[in-house]
Length: 186
Length: 186
DNA sequence: TGGGGCATGTAAGGGGTTACATGATTGA
DNA sequence: TCAATCATGTAACCCCTTACATGCCCCA
Image 1: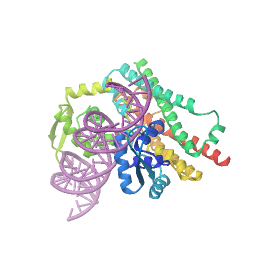
Image 2: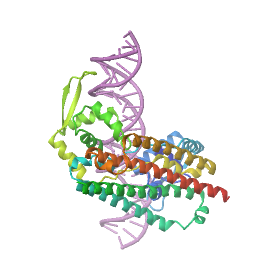
Image 3: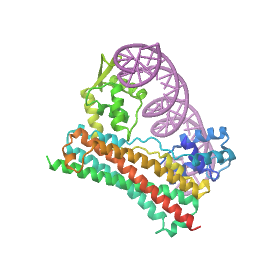
């Protein structure tokens, strides 16, 4: 049900499903993904629940579109979700599942290679994030203090991505070093 | 399909679905969860695919049980999975979705409280992990070098959990500090 | 004799992905 | 005119969760 609340949150400004998807891909995609084929039915359900209202408007750029806006009921549901406990969902780290069974390969060199490839992947992601930061963010704290609220909090979640990727790399380094030590001691 | 490979990996030793679930909860639960109601049908499918063979044996502790063992085909599928690229699955961080929209609360004190509660949650998890480490792990590196392979690699994935939780806490601290600075500057 | 651990499943439903269908408008 | 972007949707399928059904064995 989190997607429902995310859409509610994004509807701070009225928007169509298609526009919401674009916002998604620009700002939330680092920790949440959603396809149009999931967004449209969800919006429909939210409308039926009375969380949003929709109207069809003519678009100059293509076919007609449906613009949705939050209702009072939507406001209060969003508020409730944000006022509740932080939600700690399940995690399923596929690469960790692979890493867990590396002994099955019976070849430390292959395990080492796995972690090196994993590290390279994390580095690519980290570089992408740092590039975004370079393009969008200022230096120091004064810059942060003048950001409007609705950009400040998203920025904090963006920082989470950088923290996570940096730590993933540090963990890979630790593993690589442990594996190398083991290989030498044989 | 990752569950399939995990079960294949756990079937290094023949085991029943019930026993696999116990192993799951002891070792993999920090980065992967699975219910019996998902494990049983998956094992059935794996058997049909010829990845494992099963036989019913009498149990002294309860009803009959089905013990599964990996076939050669299962060995080679597992090997392929481990030899392939590290898999970077989707992530969906519910708490980050909440954090993204904190400006909707229009009250910095509530946002601050959110991050404090989040930090407390991460600290609880970290303490659980550290307690497990204290009970199961030795000091320094000599201890690590004498671990058998099939305990060494799982230990590395366990370390991932500690890294992730520590970083989550550091991120919360950063956010709390930014929010406090903002509140003072108003 | 009744509860708890052992043991295997089915059913219903939620959330998400991939693929497909449809059609308007703009610009090369 | 043809591809790209805008725009909305449906269908089939996969993975997973929650709840339920069944029955054995042991010990208090």
